[in-house]
Length: 404
Image (cartoon, rainbow, N blue to C red; front, side, top):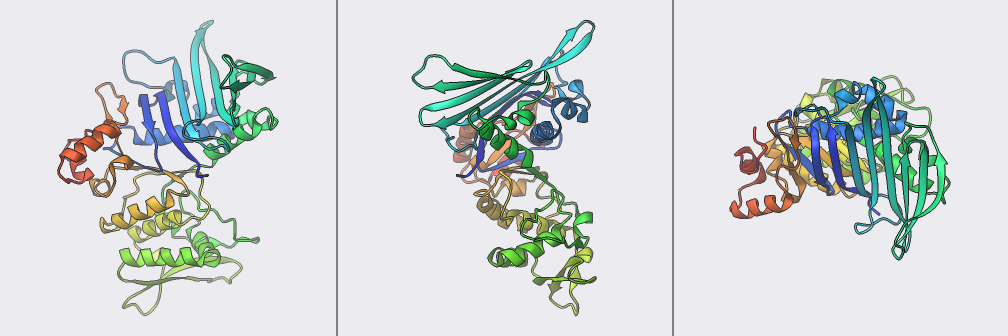
């Protein structure tokens, strides 16, 4: 079963005053700077921070409730709300999805602000049966749900700390109470990756580990690019050969990619590029900015063990437009293994997308993000009337909204 999110709803989180976004395998957020693309990605960072540290530290990392909540309009909101629908657990489906909702509420009491949270998990257990867990105050109620029953049946209650998140605490529940399902949701959100190649770090040699290479994970900033590529060649020769062929297609001077071990095979590895007309190979440290970003993105797209969700900020940055056609093809292939949420402001990239892959973003006069600025149905109707104009050109001209 391919795990993926079906829908995201957000209220009052940064510029996201009220958004509801259907999500497919490949989702590309297009819009100028400042319309909320990064804030949307930060929703997932926020949930991951909650799992790793809990609600209060996650808020403090963003400057507290006031700095995290929507700052537009005439009044400060009293709640932040996030809701997800997904196909992640064993028995879930599009007609019976997993659901998770979190609401953080601020109230003024005795001259000071207090925060509280409500959470709910809902998922399908076996045929005809479901499970709902609701959290309020210091109690979590675990309930069985049956299609034939008019009301939920309370199974039992569990005590927990007043402001502690179920995402961080409930995976410890027994399997019968839903611990496996909550853990599946929490693990998926905690493992998601916001990928952005840091060219400075990606240039460096990688230290060889003392143990096996099979579990090498590509870091979010590609700082272990050399080690990941070496591991890919060693463990999956077919994927490696495809990656090299893709790199050659975009970099005509490239003949091959290889590795050297300047301090001995057990200590560090560097990537070297064999290029036409040069007597000696070029170390990755001397390669161009665009070449390193391209290799980092190809490494991501050929990752054999990606997380359920991968986010990429400004994917086209530093890349020649000629690379975008190949990149979109590979994104579609890789979306069978990981769901993508990608931010860009490149019309050239949008030109290569289908209407169901594009999410247009804009911002209203009160600072609230409109995501999507046009529905999928509206987008398809506009494309049909446009007589074949590509999506990027339609967006750049303002026809789709969210213009520059």
